[in-house]
Structure formats: C-alpha cells, structure tokens
Length: 180
Picture 1 (cartoon, rainbow, N blue to C red):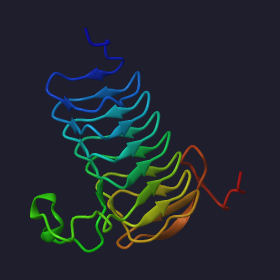
Picture 2 (spheres, helix red, strand yellow; picture 1 turned 90 degrees about the vertical axis):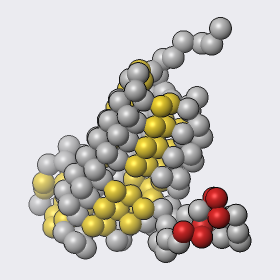
Picture 3 (cartoon, rainbow, N blue to C red; picture 1 turned 180 degrees about the vertical axis):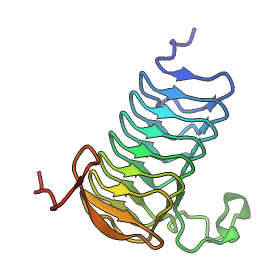
Picture 4 (cartoon, rainbow, N blue to C red; picture 1 turned 90 degrees about the horizontal axis):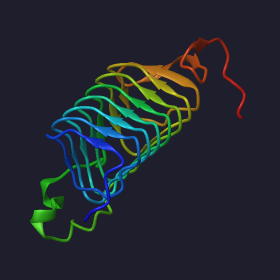
C-alpha cells in the first residue's frame, strides 16, 4: 500500500513527481512532471505547469497560469503572480524539441533563471533567461526582464528599468538596504 500523500492535489491536477513537500497545495488543471521538485508549504494555482528539472523552494506562491521550465530555480519565500512568463531558451528553435532526435537535443541550449529568496514578480511579467533575480527584489506587473535584477531592487517597464528600492516586506524605501 502506498504511503499517504502529505500534500493536497486537486482531483483535476496531475502530479507525477514524488518530490512535492508536505503542506503544499496543487490546484485544478495544473501538471507537475515526474522530475520536478516542489518544496514544503507551496501554493500552486490553477493551470500551472512545472517541467522536469525545475526546482521550487519552500513557501512559494505560484499564481494561476504560470509555467516553470527546466533550468528554472525558484528559491524559498517567493511570489510569482498570475500569468508570469519565464523562458529557458534564448534562441528557440523547433529542431531542439525532444521528438526531433537530432544533434540539437543535448539540452546545452537551456538558459538558467534563478529567482532568489523572497523575490516578488507581478502579474504578466516576462522573464527572459539567462537572468538572476536577486533576493527580495520586486518586478512590477507587466515588466519585461532582460537583465539581472539586484537584491532589493524595484524594476518596472519594457525593458525593465530601475525605479527604486524595497525592503524585505516589499515596501518602497529611499535608499538601498545594506547587504545582510
């Protein structure tokens, strides 16, 4: 008899991974592939997709309509707003699809994205890898991120630009916080 699940999965969710942490919740029409890793106490909204090789830390909120691709690491205590788009291929080509079975299928083309601890990404933002979103940074809704974002930095626009600083709670502050 299999061990009882320690996380909640809606009856219309597909959870193939054995690496979903206790207390996490996976809502309807979301799909978590077998080699994905999900931490403890996460909330994964409806219509999300988490691909083999993606890593999601503890206490992460992923709102509806988000895809987390291979090469993406989401650290603890992060917030990903509805319909945020991540990329893991800087120069996409159909020939790299696994079913193409050619020399381009070695996955060396995957570009990493790291969303560091405590980061917040607003609704409909687009994150184009390879990038690092620094600890406790804040990406405003609708932004297009083409570069690394510093710790505690507040960015907005297309392409995103620096518009200020935030503290660990996401509140705007006048000066850059000292590194901890």
